[in-house]
Length: 361
Image (cartoon, rainbow, N blue to C red; front, top):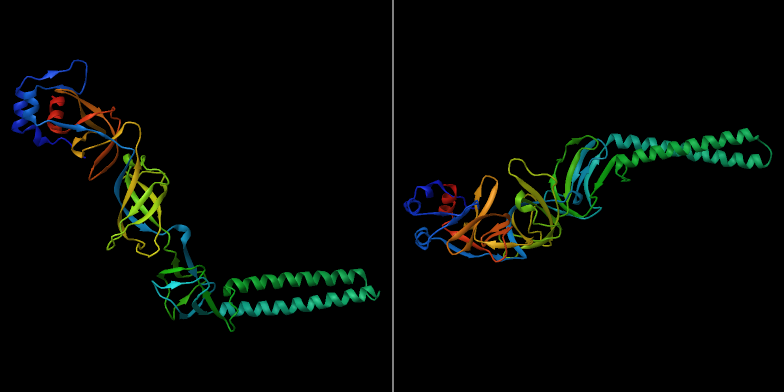
């Protein structure tokens, strides 16, 4: 976006123009009338603003992993890392063994469960025996009820001990305290967080696994332009070293504006079957932005900024120009897409700084 430069105000051309008679338009702020001689000396040129229904704008972005497509593999119990089968960057399938742990804690929990199971089996056998005796009238109802209660308590204790063992072992039934930790989903090893021979505590992270297709891109868009981008808008992502771009669509946006950069974070889901895009990679994203009523493409040199206002000069008639406030929807190499222009507008794209200095006088 171009702004009138202070140097322009000191240029010989502007000084010459200021020396010529200038016709002000009464009651019309921002209006300037020039003679044909003044227009020629200032080099004023205008062009038709081209109505658009859609344009493309390029923004910086970073490749990221969707939160729901990455998993943390942790140690189910405290133990010693005896074996690791994959490393960072390796593909893994769901259920593939990743880590072998030796855990005294898990071994003790297994022994506790086996003891509780034996006790539950014995209590159940006693209850069944007492049922038969009760039918023969050899024992009382209270004796049968007591036997039933003992069997139920023993079963509950066995279930509790079994669950504790399953949680500690990751449901791996390897003997002698050896635990096998497996991949929860298919994906790629993004980070190895433990080493062979390391002693780890329960719930200590071992690996981080993620799925790379589809993948997300985190896009930084100026807040003034974010309103023209809708959920579902198509995007194309530049892939360094490849001629073909990855394609996807906008899936959402952040609810706040970054205070320092005044940008809004947009998220797009992108197909990545060849795994050309990597998490953390910086790239460029082209987004199709929607037009609106009276939206048109104008040269970037037509845009003037003054404080928080964005304006262009419109050629109303021969020698007559009027400042018009606009909203910039997008900007790229081919120009800017602006909203707020009257239909069939002719915008000044050369001599804008000189016209602005005359309005300021």
